[in-house]
Length: 328
Image 1: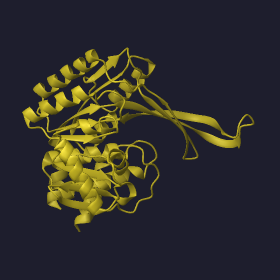
Image 2: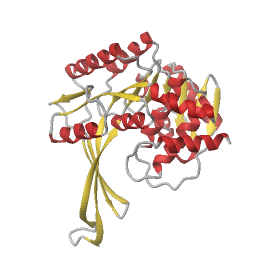
Image 3: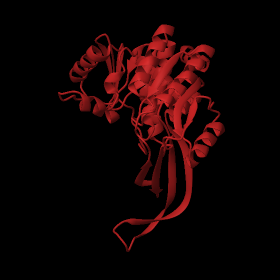
Image 4: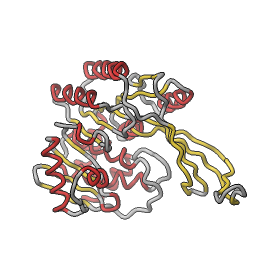
């Protein structure tokens, strides 16, 4: 138990650089009491709305919730929603020095309409084109300044295919990390899937792997080992960690693997679970924890946030208790 306490205390000393797509998760809540006479759709009587930080910004919130120090780098629009995003960062105690304002794109906003705890509709406002060369250079300059100023323990690429992580920027940041011997962790999406060569840990989900490979991948050890081998041949990554939804996760290094089932949970909402998993995985990797422990922590953390409605960060104290119970 002392070892677990020491591990969770050690998270507080870590510094984590996060680069990727950020967004506002906007919740519009109301009640439904009738169907519209204009179309067969529910009429939502508005009650309140709330903005939360999403995407790579939610990763930063999870890193902070675990006690570590996050440094977030991204680009948002120079528009009305920038104020909501920056206000949320300030209220959550996040440093905004790495946030670039652009007149060439909008701030990504995902608006969810919820009534009686049921998710009825989502409306997205976003641009998905790559950053301009000027924007990428500006972002890279600020990121490089951070690497010069602070001893970074791990770098996270949080890719939602919204354009911040363009291929040349990915390559440059990986090169910077390799020169400084900083481990790198990737949560990929479809467009840049094969652009993360030489990263330390690659964390797709099962659907993302299936979309990229020419053969069927099942949530079973032999199938996942084959997929991990193909990924390593193309990316030269050291560790593959695949999230399997309700089947848990698969973690593999040098042909040795762990297939870890999920714990029984009352699932309310899966939004943001991937952000939580990548955050906890990155901190475990930075501390040099055994791969099985990293997978167990990630499994518990991802399951925990699924019990809550909306995008929320992990509860560190609850995670420590649940992790300690596994060791009993």
